[in-house]
Amino acid sequence: MNGVHDMGGMDGFGTVPVEANEPLFHARWESRTFALMRALGFTGAWSIDEFRYVTEGLPPHVYLSSSYYERWVLTLELLVLKYGLASKEELESLTANDRAVEVKRVLKPDSVKSLIPRPNYERDPQAPAVFSVGDLVRTKNIHPVGATRLPRYTRGKVGRVERIQGCHAFPDTVVSRDDEDPQWLYTVTFDGRELWGPDADPTSKISIEAFEPYLEPEGTHGGAS
Amino acid sequence: MADHDHDDDHQHDHDHHHHHGEGHASELSEMQIRVRALETILAQKGYVDPAALDEIVETYEKRIGPHIGAKLVARAWVDEDFKKELLKDVAIASERIGLTEIGSHVIALENKPSVHHVVVCTLCSCYPWAVLGLPPTWYKSYAYRSRVVKEPRKVLADFGTTLPDTTEIRVWDSTAETRFIVIPQRPVGTEGWSEERLASIVSRDAMVGVTVLQPVIQEA
Image 1 (tube, rainbow over the protein chains, first blue to last red):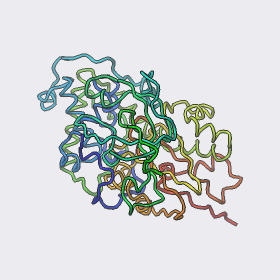
Image 2 (image 1 turned 180 degrees about the horizontal axis):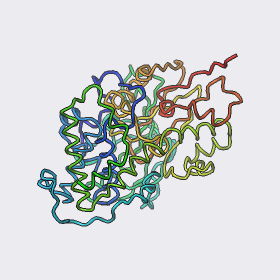
Image 3 (image 1 turned 90 degrees about the vertical axis):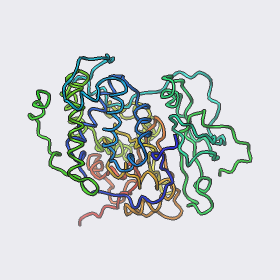
Image 4 (image 1 turned 45 degrees about the vertical axis):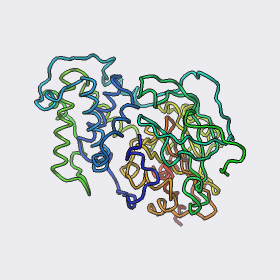
């Protein structure tokens, strides 16, 4: 969706706020929120892709006026209600009813270490990769209302395939129809001027990790350097 | 409530830190109430185990952090073969030095005089937790996410970083299930240092690519 989360290239946010000797968490509720997110993710009640999509769907004014962990709280509340892990009444009254739904598993302290390594979303390919390293490609000019990992600032642009990153669960269909529909993933690199016009820093190059359905072949007359 | 009594056994130093800037007390207490409600109900219903939540927080506060990435960088500086392996596959190279919790698709990028890598996630705030721990607030800020893909040199200047005009700036937007760690250039003045001492000067920000490591002035 074309949400406010997709902020690459926006102006007006000022200088980057750097806090010296920043603590890992600024308040206890932040650390509990982080832990709840990981523990609830472990239950399998929802995917990481849906978690991101629900955050992206927060109203723009709410998204922008909330901190990172505040957005996580809002997202967790929405997902907990959606999947029936708790009701609004329970959260307000602090009185739990019996469980209405079961989950695949519950995280115990001795399983926490299994959450540390990055999970692997690589899957068996359904077809050979269409593109090769060095190919010129053009990102599609698409504006799906569902989940997508193709940022707006890179749509309809010509870039070059720099790496092939394997075949992975496709977040777009994981969210829209609970289907991993694995797709090849490529690092696609754009010249700064292709994205931002002739005034862009000529020494800058920007890459995204693009799933194959986001890309189409570009002829040998493409604009990328 | 029983599930919170458990927490009283633990010292949480970060309880005593307070929000700077936009947060103020009423917002904080609203969040405290909402998070407590979630934890209380979900624990009562058996969907989460508060002891596991404690363990998660403790793991990221004490065990997982940028010292892991720093160890990889220091080894790469002193061992060319290791560096090649790291650039090929971070997880496999890491196992060679006893770091077995990296997982899939963490990718190392080597800074050189000719090219400087910098990492962002414009869509959310994807970050290589397994090698750098949890991201600082600036990495998650709207200013960083919006600007670094468009005006990377100006963003680097916010961090006091100036690169030669001839250096290519390569920005990596972590839009999918790959994560990136930058291998900074080894600073001059560190010749002959032990790996451990080298690791001590490898900063988190340099491994995201927003700073470069400064030359070390040797004491006479």
